[in-house]
Amino acid sequence: MNLQLMREFEEFEGLGAQVVDDATITMENEDDDPSFRPAQASLLTSNDIYYELDKRSLKTTGFPDTDREILQRVFDEEFKADLEDMRARRKEKQRKAAQQLGLQRRRMLMEKTLQEEQDELAKNHQIGLMIEHIKDNATTTSLRIEVNSVSARSLAKAMWVNDTITCLDLSSIDLNDHAGCYLARILKHNRTLKKIELDNNKLGSKACQAFGESLMTNTSLQYLSLDSNQIATYQDMNGLKALADGIRINTTLTSLNLWRCGINVGGGGILASGIEDNDTLLFCDIGHNNIEMADVKRIVEKLDENLAAYEKAERQRRRDAVEDGKKKAQQESVLEEQAKQEELSKWLEERRSQRAEDRRSAEQMRILHMQEEMEEKKRQDDLRRAEEKKAAEEAAAKKAKKKDKKGKK
Image: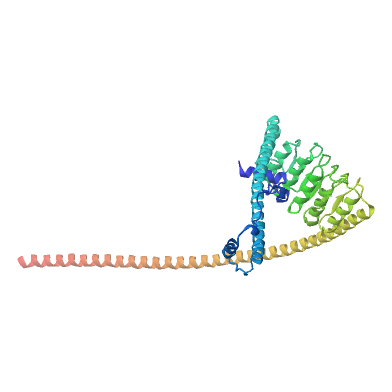
């Protein structure tokens, strides 16, 4: 058995973890073994009585009748403890058997429920494909889908993992109370859905109770419409009580439509008590119900109070937004001016650096030019001296040659 499937099934069905209520397991004294009775001290000899007392670390009084009475009280206490232990073991055995039977019934119910859902999706491939798209977050943010009471359960499971859809319209499609419970429990896991419309279906007290339980923990839903669903009767107002408790705790729901929902005189007071403890609900349509005018007045006054507080907070929020906008604009202006100054300073620094670099380059070029001129002058001087030396050598050679000629003559 897939434990994950079982946990999911139990949560959607509103089943607790405890399969068997111990209070339902009763034990009757008639079930006890009639042959199981306390030992009789009166049937024991004096030696046996002494032995039994000693075995229990009890001292004899020396009076046989008194010892027999003491031992009989001990026998009675031991019998009582053994009887309770036997009954406890028998009850535990019955509890385990009942738990096993309960688990088996849950498993069979889960398998039946899952098979119904699979068969329904197999008959309507378009709905099955749409539900797969919902699981994959491949839909638009607003969805209107024509499911029935069976395929609605599959839709609810898909919505558990969807974080795209914000508005879900399931009005006027004849959904029953069981399907409504599944849809209500979407809100226990989904934190994206803001609006759900279930007008003109066949939801009842159980679905209403499931919505009340979900509203206690949900922090995203803002609009809920149960218009034209018989969520309360004179005989059953448990759903309305749970819804009132959910409203009392919830802090995100702002609009609730309970038009023509069968709310009677007693139910109006229950609803009014829940709304009076809520500071965020702004609109609640309770028309076409049998609610006393005093309770209607309580509801209207509280909604007016919430609306006035909301409008005041909105005005303050807008003023704060304007002030924040001004501050932000000023900060941006200051930052822009700082950026301009920084850019100008950076440009001036770059210009200074460039001019300094140009001067260094020019100085280097001047020095290099001077070095080249000096080297050229030195080369020219060396060349001139070499030529002069060569000319002198040639002149000396000529002079020596003339001398040699005169000597020969």
